[in-house]
Amino acid sequence: MTAPLDLDQLRTFVAIVDTGSFTRAAEEVFKTQSAVSMQMRRLEERLGACLFERNGRAMRLTDEGGRLLAYARRMMALSQETLLAFDEGAMQGHLRIGLPDDYAERFLPEILARFARSNPLVELHVVCEPTANLLEHIEKNRLDVSLVTDCAETATMTKEIVRTEPLHFVSSAAHDIHNEDVLPLALGRADCAWRVEGLKALDTIGRRHRVLFTSWAAQTIISAVLAGLAVGVLAECSLRRGMRVLGEADGFPKLDDARIGIVKNRNAEGPIVSALVEHMRESLHNLPPAEAQAKPSHLPETRAIRSQRLRPSMSVAGW
Image (cartoon, rainbow, N blue to C red):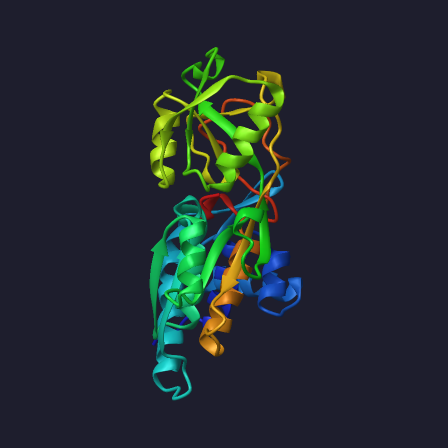
């Protein structure tokens, strides 16, 4: 009979992929780096396949490693689900979480994946709305936890700042709308912190402008920018291929960084809420790492948009 795969080796393998290196994986699984290397050698011997290959200083999954990753994640999830099925103390219930749609595409997958893996019996209700709405929902007990943009205009309750993001003026890389005498803008609603910051910066340098599009939906702003209809103000996490970051060389002022915080309903207590907050905190701390702040330039098709306070990751992770 063929011997089964070692779950501990698979756990280490997944940790290497998720963290981007053997060194960080060793910290994640509480082993020495030599022990992690030994586990991977034994796993490769067991499968008769090479799982990693080096490309200069970077390390990538081989095709065989990519195939194993999907199976490994399923096996780890099934193992966790099996243990929880026999754990009478496993956390159950539901939580209401909010975040602006600017952040949803970049941050939500990691938050959900981390939380669901360790708390599969907890139902999450997710709301995507502007920060002002989310703070109101928290205040009126309609949300338990929310990710928000921190700014003086909405500083009505305590926030834990967990991440900073460079804020940019952006336009389409295929158009020159940013050279218009009267700059057309696509911005959030009047109470949007990024709108206030962008308009203040343009007024400071005396740049003539007019707001052409106003929306609380990030995708509307992004669409207007990519269509070459207007210049927008976006955090680096919201940038897309086909955008151009506008800087001082283009006649645009530097903007203050956007600060992202976690705010919790004062009535929301208990281990489930604490676990969610911790997963949100860890997710935003451990995303793939940033280069220096983006320079004003066209964003090449192969460039990943990266932000501050991120951890290195392999290309197979998508960043």
